[in-house]
Length: 399
Image (cartoon, rainbow, N blue to C red):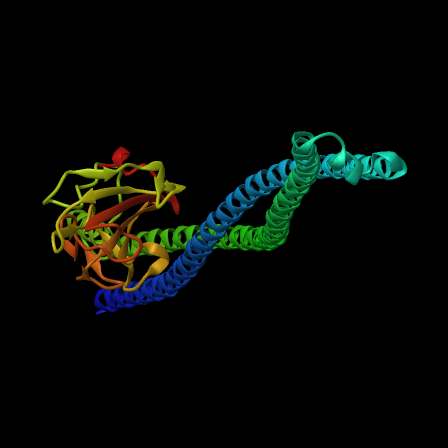
């Protein structure tokens, strides 16, 4: 009876330890899930801000190009205005010269008439009546020729002057149009420069906001690492307590079996190779490391395995699902995180369907989700990550 009571006491202690272990794990699971969700939120905000920043950067480039084009147009118009001004100067000089020539011709005509008037003995009548009839006709024609010549010369000079003035008016009109257009371009340039300045201010604010979001994501990632580490410590403590309690109540072989069972349930990773997470495809479409995506250089924290929608996604190792979320999730889309123990977690992102839930224990090779293209994805594939103590690492080192 005493031995039976002792065994009962040991069993009760084991149940209490297990209960405490599960409670601690549940609390810690909620904590790590909370920090993961907050990290996802910060990463999503970061990505949205980066998109806004890229758009603003593109707008700035476009506006600056418009300013450069306006500068070229302004320079072109200024050159045209300069040429028109020089042409106007030349026309004005030609007009002045023609006015002077016209003035001289008129003066010559006046002088000639005055001289003929002063010589009373040589009036038109005298000239006409001097000599015979032939001389009369000849003298009449001569006077007419002189008069016509003078009048035609004056008319020619005057006509040329009017033509020059008309051309000058046309050039002045074109120059005025060019000056008005140039003024319009200058005003438009000022507006574009002001817009570029405002966009630059917006760019600076977005860069500051992006920096804050990235800092938040890093902070929550660190808190998640701490939560996972705490979970590991609690798990190991619970396993050790259960092992010691079991050792006091059963044989060595039974103890070993119990220990193995507990280890399998918790999925403690022992450093072996992880299984390939997408059995239907071995095609890696994007490696771990820096890459250009949507025109932006970023760090790819896992590998992408191209596969058709609905293809099976399997657990790379036994463990406990600590997160199984539907939604955008910072670009991961529908995704799962499995804790394998010893600080190792794996992530499976962009799934079309999830077949497991948080807190569930899974075995290596078990189907946990289906390939999709949710979240920030350009086509159906599996984004697979391996993290050590919360920090991403190259999955190919573990597969």
